[in-house]
Image 1 (cartoon, rainbow, N blue to C red):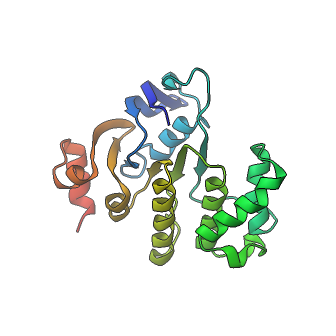
Image 2 (cartoon, rainbow, N blue to C red):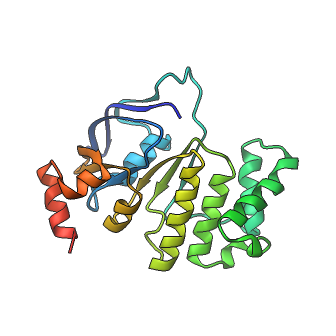
Length: 232
């Protein structure tokens, strides 16, 4: 993955500023967690980075890409399941990406096995539990072999057991060389998965730090206040 560079990026809707002049360079390697209170702009910043939204002002670019778009995938908090089997949901994503028919099913079955759903490959995806559907969504993204995987609150609607299963899969994907950029409101999860924390407050990036130092010694007053309120 080439560095993702945001230069004075802002995003506004009807004169309301949601992202306010964010400048940051995100490198390959560490898992980057975008953290902040509700309404801070986490999901909007994620969509800007992925390209689903265009900034009102400022620039977003992959430095040194020479016009090449990085292989990337995005998994939402509430994944959309097609009216077909879990296996077909995964192969359909690969079809859209131009992967050859001979590779699709083999790769799809491999990733479904990796996320613990090989036994449900032929089950209609919409009949699966919320945690199982999220695992299908991760398998669908993983099958594309992305250089960057964006995850927007991927466990927000799951019980603790299902959330831990998702965290384990995210760790596997990262171990395979995929850059993880993720939003979460769960501080325990941010501690477990966050090699670095990007802390947003009212649309501004007010702190960036290694995960361990952020939770032990936050530098910004906004982050310190957030942690005092949220941590027991």
